[in-house]
Image (cartoon, rainbow, N blue to C red; front, top):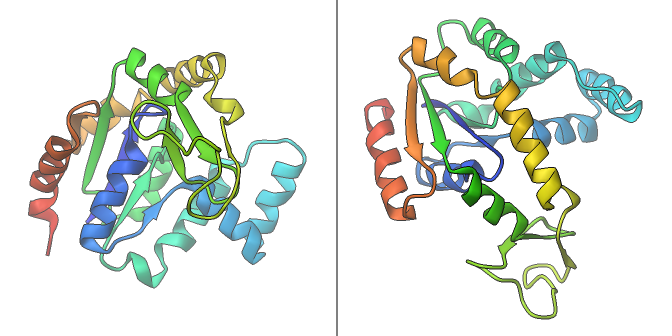
Length: 215
């Protein structure tokens, strides 16, 4: 199965991706993780991306698509994959389609969550500064001493989880990424799920959607 998960920051894309990835033994691929790995491995595209990022620039779509081509060619993608939050723009979506050809994306799940819910989720989020484990002050509070139980790292509120930053990220999402809804609707590949529904309900809906794709 070849899937894309879309949704605003805080819509729960990553959480829902973990469920399907564990169930079907497929990788969850995000551009951030992919870039970090390419830079760490010192690949040609990784070196190009590193130079651009260190100069404060934005990595071009051509490099991102090239990195995606390399990543999807790896053996763990043989059974399928989930692209988490990619593509982000119409240009990236068109580039991805051209790159994949006949082995294109089969299903796009868009997790729709009201802005008020997203604000509460993200401004309540706390993250381990060492291992990245996520907590939530409302639904999954961290230990009182703010020490991560997994690795002993310090639990913090990230700068991009403050209200002003979250609101700005939502505006950018609406401008750049929301148009992808129409793009994939025209391809009859879009499924919209309520990202604030009970977890069990979301899992059932996802299972029903991917059932025809499981070989």
